[in-house]
Structures are given as C-alpha cells and as structure tokens.
Image (cartoon, rainbow, N blue to C red; front, top):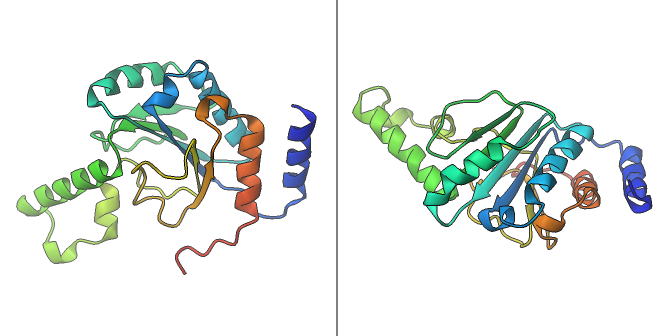
Length: 202
C-alpha cells in the first residue's frame, strides 16, 4: 500500500460511521476486454471484505446477448476470497454466496422478466392481481437485495443496471476506467459514502 493509500485508510479509521455492508459495482462487457480487468475484479473483492463488507454484487452489462456464456465462463475462473456465484438475469434462483455476479442486458430487461413471471403466477392462479406488491417484484429479480453503495466506473450513469435495487443506495461515480481502478479509488468511494447522511428516500 502506497503512502496516499495509507493516508486514505487512516482517514477511514478515524470515521465512526458504519461502512457499507453490501457493495455493488456496475461494469461493462467492454471493461472486461481490457488487459488486467479480471485481476482488478479479484482485488476489488479483497478490498471490499477487508473494509467490512458482508456482500458484494457485480453487474456486468452487455450489448450482445451472445457474449453472455463466454463472460460467465471467464468470471467463474476468477479467484475470490469468499464463495462466488455467477449467473445471468434469466436465472432467478437464489444463491447464498457472499459474492454474486450477473451478466445481462440491463435493468429494464430484468424488470420486464420479473413482470412476465408475475403474470404467469397470476395466470396459474397462484397470485391475485390485487395482492401484488413490491415483495412479489423483488422475488423475481436477479438481485433482490438493495446495496448500500453502488460504484460505477468510467461514466456518471448506471447504464440501465440495478434500476430497482439502487433506488435507496448511495451512488458513487468515478471517471476512472475499470482497468485503472485501484485501491485508492475504492477508499475514496468509502470515504464519500461515510460522509453522506443516508435518507432512504425520505
């Protein structure tokens, strides 16, 4: 750890705020084509758990659905400090792994799939339309949990991902591209998070 990284870590230690227990990062298919991108992902997992995260979510956006199987195979080879589950937005089976990675077309696509599955439940007589609430939608999302902190590298937009789950999350945007994302950038995100007063929509 360099001198500046140690400085940022010391600032974090002085904070009395609770660190984010669930951290998410949104990256793109293009990010993973860069040299060293998977190593950055492995390091990201290490940093998150070093600074008290309990869960880590990675959402990889793709333009070509045909690339999903290849990306999933590559991601399953990633070394992680805790159990890792890789799946596509078509797979809504619950995974208890503390690291969850999904590859897919975006939040609108995920939400449309959830609505379609709810409609199937209604048609099968398993759910009455007047009984549908937020819980029913969340049960059909790939990631039903709401991250405390969502990090997006390279641009100030979520690229249509986690549009439901991130509604009360703290969003951190950095113009640093994923290939150049380092521990100091993660520490900056944590400092920014701990300096905010969370309102959860209030």
